[in-house]
Image 1 (cartoon, rainbow, N blue to C red):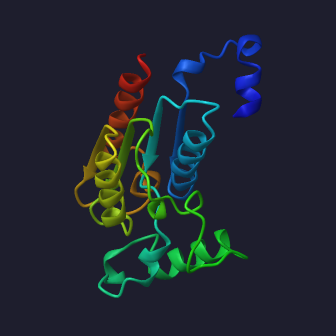
Image 2 (image 1 turned 90 degrees about the vertical axis):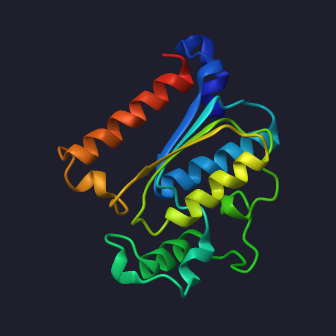
Length: 179
């Protein structure tokens, strides 16, 4: 991103319309990048677009969740994912830029869109993250898809629910980037 910003004029990039988009673990990375850019103060994101983001490593340890409810990504898969991502770091106190849900300060972040299904393992942590962002004055739009599990939209892209989710994302991107 720093390379793109440094070459913005040459590449025809409007620095006032930079967004970070990601899905699942990539959305967690996008949220972490928004935190890092805020802390650095060098590049200002206009918008963060987070599709069922993986934000909190502690979800793997929740015993109140019934794994039979989750398709494609359950607590075991989540523990493996976080274990791989945080390998070599102190798992009791990982860096907040790697685990956005552990960040203490929500202010001065760009507006966010968070899309998640109500049968997604990340549902609770996504709603908690949206609420946390709002405590810092960050505008947040949450799109909850009833009956949808993690990655549902990749299973059958032509399904009406997947198309509606895709359309909601395009609408949010256009609105937030002024397109």
